[in-house]
Every structure is written in structure tokens, then in C-alpha cells.
Length: 482
Image (cartoon, rainbow, N blue to C red; front, side, top):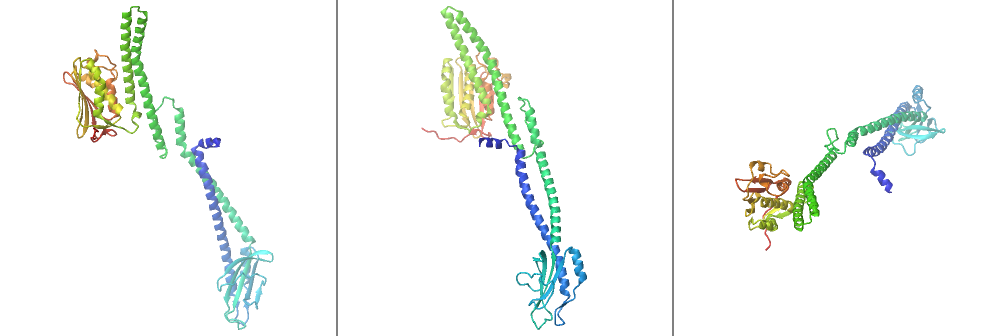
């Protein structure tokens, strides 16, 4: 059973079409052939019967009862002509219904059942050991004979059916031969049409097989049938996703190798120095330096992973969740407050009393806001002020991080979001230049706007979410539980 299922699963579209269309066509054409032959036989029988009816009427016109008896002037020339036409023996019989008068071939059989006056009846019977086609007609005698008022005269004309059957058989065979040729031609046209219709699919298969593994260009669908274009579009969409995924993975590997190679090399050097040093104080200082290097490497790795996740579109394929921004801002300030306190910085929160709901993944919003706050803390000098605020208007939601640090030049603002780039104010701080790049990537995924403003000292980073965003947007205010 397993083998049969595997066999069916490997059947081509070509074989499915041919095996479904050809037998159906054969069945239909066979039924049409039988019907046409049946109609042909009826038409030939009708033509012969009309000829037989003509002879019947001719004989009936020659019957006379005027003399008081039954007489007939038999048209021998007419019968001879009819025999030549039929190519067979012709028989006739003229009789009264009571059988008192009987002329002609008296053994020619009568039909079963009574005859209707003036309506010819056609039937087949056996006469002299041969099958004979007979036409019978009954009509009232005018005048009647033997005072038999209401009596009728019956006229029978018959012919052998051998010639008729031979002619019918000949015509049927000609019809069958013609129909078989037509069926074969139709089947040939059908097979060629299926093969021609599937040529674009064959070319598509050949094109994909001939492509190198790294060729992820979209498939051209100009000459593809309309029924197959949805499949081609789906394949192109899948290839585009795969190409984007491969590009993101390649970029992540490049970024990771670029940013982690130097810290690891420094750590290896510091480790070698600590192993060679015998002074405990020097070993301690080397270990502390290694700890700082590990911290920077860990932060860089986490930022690289966050950037990769932010750029990964498939992370947003699930149903979006609802996030409460005020509670999220409070949690971010609570987590980063120890770092601000260590630098004697004032980290504040300015939010409304009510809740502000946002339809977006919580982890993306947390990454964006936390990176802005962390970036502000790093660039703000000791004793500075950093404020995180959340505001909602009738048309948008704004999350703003403001500091009184050295600010940013117009050139730095223009190039903000480029990974591994740090502005002039960042030369005296540690970092990999990934914070704003992460924020920019997240806002692109959320279809929001990322704005930077700086006038002299201080900088203001703003995340703007509008109500008409295509997938994510703000939600009506909700009541919070006490």
C-alpha cells in the first residue's frame, strides 16, 4: 500500500490530465458512435419502408370491387421496377378481411393484431424460410362485395431484407470507420494540446534546475498560464523570504565576526598576560580588564542578536499582542536605574496617570525604548539628566527620551541608524554603535517613525506611532486594575 501511495504521489500533471481526459473521451465517443449508428439504421429503414409504402399504395390504386368481386390490374412494370430498386424478390397479397377472396402470394403472413384502416403497418416476418419486410394496409371496400357492408380489403407487399441488411451493414461500417478516424484525430489533438499547454511548466522546471544554488531571482511569469501564476507568485514570495533570510544571516555573521574578533583577541592577549604575570596585583588588574572586555563583548553580542531579531520579518508573523506603554516605561526605568545611579545621573519618568495601550509585540517596544534610554545614559555626562516620557494624542503616540548631554551634530543625526557608526560624542564612551541601528530597524518593522532632535547641548529621541499604521497601532485607553 505504501508503494502505491508513493507511485501516485509521483504522477505528473501530464499523466493525470491524459489518464483522466482520454478514457472519458473514449467513453463519450463510443456512446456517440453507438447513437449515430443507431440513428443511421433508423434512417435507412425509414427510406426502405417509404419505398415499400409507395409500392403498397400503387397496388392499392389498382384494386377494384365494382364488378361485384375482387379484381386487380397488377402493374407488373411497377413491380419489376421495384424489384430492380430493391435488388431482391418482391411479394404481394391482396385479400378480403374475411379471407373469401385472396390474390397473389397467399402464404405471405399477416401482422399480429388488427390493422387500423388507411394506416400502413411495417413489420418483419419469415416467408419461405427468408426474413421479409412487409408493409400492410387495410381499407374499407367501396363498393362492398357479396353484400359485405363494412368489409375491408387488405393489401400486403413484402421484400427480402438481405439486400437491405447488407446495405445497412456497409453504411454502418463506413460510419464506424469515419468515426474511428475522427476519434483518433481528436485524441491526437487532445494529447498535443495537453503537451503544448504544459510546455511552460516544462520550461519552468528546466529553468529552475539550471539555476545555480545562489540564484534566487524571481521567476518570470510572462508566458506562464493564468492557472499556474498563483503558484509562481507563491514560489517567488518564498524565494524572496529565503533570500532575505539568507541575507540577514550573512549580515549577522559578518557583523558578529567584525565586532567580536577584536574583543576576543584582546581577551586572549589579556589572558596570556595574566598567565605570565606573577604579581597578584597585576593579575587582578588583568582579570578586571578581562571582565570589562567580557561585559562589552556580551553587550555587543546581545545587541547583534537584537538587531537580527528586529530585522527578521518572520518575527512579526504571529498575531500581534497588546502592550501597555506606561507599565513598560516604568519597568525599563526600574531596570536601568542602578546604572544611572552608579553615574550619579537623574533618570526620570514622565507619563500620564492612565494606561496607554499599543498593539505591538512587547519585546520589540522594550528593545527600542531600552536602547534609547541606555544610549542616553552612556552619552550623558556624570550628574546629567535623562527623562523618559510617553504621550498620547488623538492621532498618535509618542515615546520620547531626552537628555542634557553633548548633543548630536546634523551630520550625526543624518547618519543615525547606520550600524557600527558612532558620532563625535561617542569617542569617549564604550559601545559598538548598534543602539540606534536597533531602534531604527524596530521602527521600520512597526511602521513607525524615528526622529532625532538636537539644539546645542542635549538630544531628544522620539518614537512616533500613528493610528493609521497598516498593522500595528494604538488602542483606546483601558481601565487599569487597582
